[in-house]
Length: 343
Image (cartoon, rainbow, N blue to C red; front, side):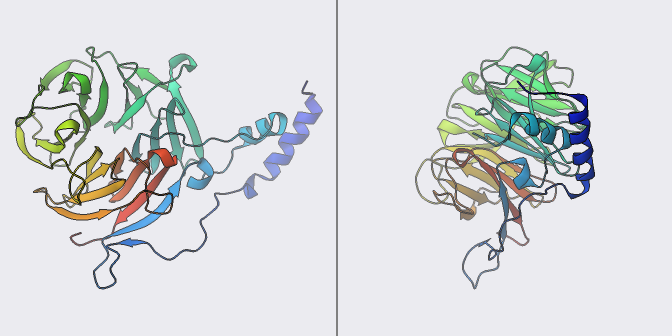
């Protein structure tokens, strides 16, 4: 039984406070040669590798006072990504949806804070698979098993369920920051639902099929700065693009195992230059296309090294064009950066 005498605790707290200024920081990777793509020496580099992380320490977040107190009494604790499926970076704070950990990790380097966020009342999130940022700093989460959309308010430790129309299997989610509207993919209903910020259903688009604007098990979604909606139409092996009213604009992609083809494409995102990034799990690759759907660059192969993947799933491109990839079965997030020019 652990002794909790007041003098003992006071001594411990005093010691830890005295050491606060020299608390451990994240271990930085050893000096390594830059890793860039394309790898040919006579071709200008377009993408560079930045880092990978699985734990708060690897992201640059040291252990806080309360955590060190707890470890003194109960032994070391370790928080790591288990099976990350979606990632979101908002003003330096990174959120990772992780069904393996049954919650959403929040990494706040500036605030020196890490949290594993579940649902209200300390209950778990069995299958968080989608993340999107709201206009007032909130983060929206889809849980496909709970068939729910939840919201994490700034600084909150719980995700609170929104009162939205019932869906079969909500997966991908995107937001219109100006209006607060939510675009939610309902995979087994083969459609995208558009909700007002208060949860009222505004509209839906899509039915099952292979034609323009039709879906066959869509999964992820992205809304770019021009209001265009990109949807991963998984079993049609294509990306479809819509305007903000859900009107079909174009599509690209085909089934295959060649470069530029889709085998089991998952996450989709765009950068400030209009390039379209698509993560393909079975190809263990990140492919980059232009706005017309022409392949510009592909990187990645099966493995655990820098720039290699094992069934990657989610992607987010931050405002500064840093690229976050949920490297799912490697249990990590890899970060890349677009460094200019046309890939």
